[in-house]
Length: 306
Image 1: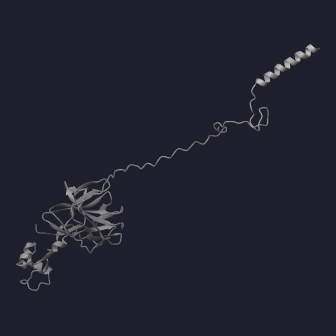
Image 2: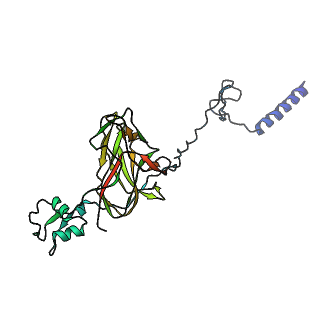
Image 3: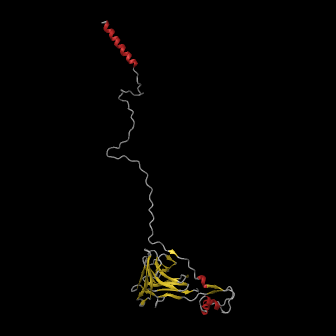
């Protein structure tokens, strides 16, 4: 019996020694490895979208709007021509010592009677003084005139009339030629239009057709009479053109439409004279000429000394 107790005592001692030599691992405060109520510490992982949905992606910066490249104008604006001299500066002559009325008239290409008629203030033709200002404008002459029996005071009814239509794709105007430097004093015609403004463009002739790239001068026409009629309207350019060939082109503004009178029946049977006419497509930039068209137009001027 004593031997069994002794053996049990030895076994207990060995077990105690083994426990004393093993390290004890501390448990974090507030938790126990065997406590089922303890909250486990986890490392957060990637968020997974619920089934059937797509997780929102981080938006990428929007690209800057692209500015469209400019497109070429198929019909560029015409180039202004050289500045034309005004006739007004040539209408007045200032007398200098040694001048005579006859000599002034000869120098300016007019007769003495025309000079005296333009200057009623001169009572004694033999008496002019240095510093006197004399009107030296000569009489107007017709450069182009196809009005025939029509005078500017006549108004024609549109019903029963005919003529040349003018719009963006068909500007139209007479050809005229100058042998000497000339003061152009009037460009006009019998017109009817849809109340949109009209203009007259003086263009040089290039190879017998209107120059599509150059406008020497532009003038706005006054509105014609009440529709539906054809009435005479004109501009007074008052500019000097050197010798050469030109076109006086009637053109609409703001997409308007007009007509140049060719013939009418009221208030009387009428047909305009024939003259070479230029045509210009302002949209496509092309031009042409017709050798003879019946249109009621007039261009006046006076020749200047070379």
